Amino acid sequence: MRTRLTEMLQLEHPLIMAPMFLVSNVAMVIEGMRCGVAGCIPALNYRTIEELRAAARELKVAKAEYGKGAFGFNLIVNKSNPKAAKQLDALCEEGCDFLITSLGSPEETIKHAHAVGIKVFCDVTDLRFAQKVEAQGADAVIAVNNEAGGHRGELSPKELIELLRANCTIPVISAGGVGNKAELDQMLDFGAEGVSVGSPFIAAVEAPITDAYKQACVDFGADDIVLTERISGTPCTVINTPYMQKIGTRSPWLERMLNKNRRLKKWVKMLRFYIGMKATEQAAQQATYKTVWVAGPSIGHTKAVEPVAAIIGRLVG
Image (cartoon, rainbow, N blue to C red):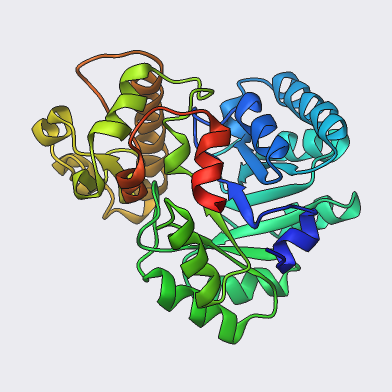
């Protein structure tokens, strides 16, 4: 399977293991590279810049050993991430194959990354932003559709891919709605140059999360995914556990009211983001009755907890 994505990153398969907060780790990405695909880790998974540097170094060694695959990191580039500038500096110094930017303007990231030969892919949900990041020099867009896990878009995979392909010249990488090879092939048929897949890898043996979280991805299906505002203030997909059913999916009434105030809105969203990330972290790292498990509908294809290599095998055939 040769596409512009496989040529750009020298991959055997047009697949990126998507960055997932607290789920993605070095062990998973190394296994991905060994299978000839790309893997990406959120920079926010590391509490310190030195830990981030150490991860980049370890991945460089692994890539040199296997001689294939690619690795990258995800940067949140808006004001909710005060570490963004230092994370970018560290990754440009250590080196990686690509960066994926989310939630903000990627202009500075693109400029600094390109100066050291790092590719930059940008999350987009619509044509306007896709054209904007292309004009800023992005190497590809990650087209986040309405079947993605986490913060998803509004358009179907087919609508979004075809819209971006018709109006952009850089590669379109589809995110959302892929849990097996047939679905991957369908995205390529729509015109994507590759896919970014996250939720199927939550139940990976190598994932550093609780067995309860992994088993939930086996036991629950696509119909059990709901949108909640309680993670970041923006609708986010989670598994509809009894706890989620109890607390509901809407933001508290006071928060909704404060969000209508222009001066307070930014600070309310930052507080909600912090509270939501802490709740997600707790649920990922210890089993409690307060479970907030982020996942997308593609967990419907997850039938067992498996090694990364087996999940990739299901996706690429």
